[in-house]
Image (cartoon, rainbow, N blue to C red):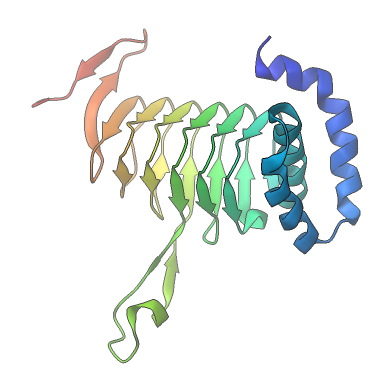
Length: 200
């Protein structure tokens, strides 16, 4: 049975739990999030889903969040349906993060929606102002393990980010990108095949 079928069966119960969490203050929600890592798989995933729905700006159906995932500024996170965020990912939504439907984010990936400036020499770099830039992950995207998606990036639909990539600029639809910084590797054809980019 697929995850979305299991979700459909449990949706009513999950909705009741999420509604109940409305009375819980945010500091306690963050504490419950950390505690959920110690729960058995199905229970932990269910609890994290309810906590995410309670805290996110918007959250769809059938969202799997693995153990050890840290989400900063969840109130600035929009997430669609049929999304998986695997263990030990880090999402900082200070500048806004939007993840659409049918997206898979493999383990130990980071999405960082801001960056430091260094223009004011009178201040240490860490004290310089930060610049925000929304990250937008469109429908049907697979992000491999250990990737870094940086601020202002849009990953267009039906694309793949290869494991270990650092994505500093937007990704075109129907492509596979990889490397540091990420560059075009392949173009995905409509039939599921691919064409290698020139020079690969």
